[in-house]
Length: 123
Image (tube, rainbow, N blue to C red):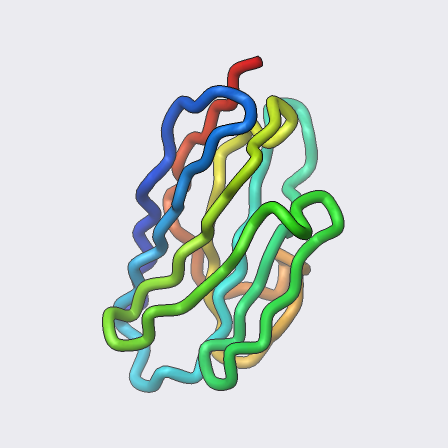
């Protein structure tokens, strides 16, 4: 059974940083994609970053480009999302998702999801 567990959320002031982690278990091989998504109250889910664990290819939504960095610790089956220069508009529940064959920011294409972690940025 594939499981994803997010951690690292919390409350931070604008301009601050947080690092989210997504611990993955249950895949038979290391060839899968991890995407990070977020959903703010009353808003649609937004795909913000993705990494292909096989070759390290990454992609970022414009809303986070230059501020967020996704990385993979393949030895620990964990993907991190380093979030710098946080803004109040980054406040949301953040989710990681995994898929063995899809690479992109369309959440509907991902088969496996974590439970989410809350990030709150105060002004």
